[in-house]
Amino acid sequence: MDAVEAAVTVVLVCAPASGLPAALAVDGLMLLARTDDTDAAPRLVAEQQPQVAVVDLDTGGGPEAIAAITAAAPDARVLAVSARTDAAPTAEALAAVRAGAAGYLVRPGSAAELVRSVRRVADGEAVFSAGLADVVLAAHGDPAAAATLLTDRESDVLRLVVEGLTARQIATRLVLSPRTVENHVQRVLGKLGLRGRAALVRYAIEHGLA
Image (tube, rainbow, N blue to C red):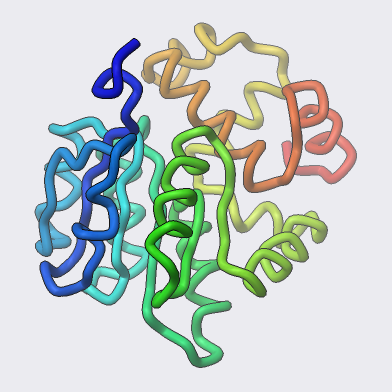
């Protein structure tokens, strides 16, 4: 497999002056498109079908933009970034995760950290800046809070996983592709800090999430 085939595909939602395009111009990542129009972003991501959409929340749109992107392109994983350095990132990070983001980074950080985070998100991991990870994990540890981190569609998929349906059966029930169902399952696993369907079913039953 050559470098082009192995590259992680990315769509950026950010202003040109954000520095993100330059930071992601590295081997192993392929920038498919960029826009600073958060209203147009969902359609662009749906058209380009990247593995990761990097959304700069300072561009505007906030968590609502993330929700619109994940609804339009459920196979794409979203990494949110923000330059906020006050107490607000905690609330913003949780709101971003609830909207469907797989990670949240506070800028300015190193370009290497951003690149690593994009790759980790593409691999199905949940990624957060230092300090924010503990907040999100604390929410995961609280069953009531954990439930609020899931989108409505993720909750639907979780309920059907607990019922014992396969990805193909869930896809038929929810009118989705099996791949999209698997992506939802991976997002739920990442948000809840779990590994594997068995652990997911056990956690959901024990904590009344399904």
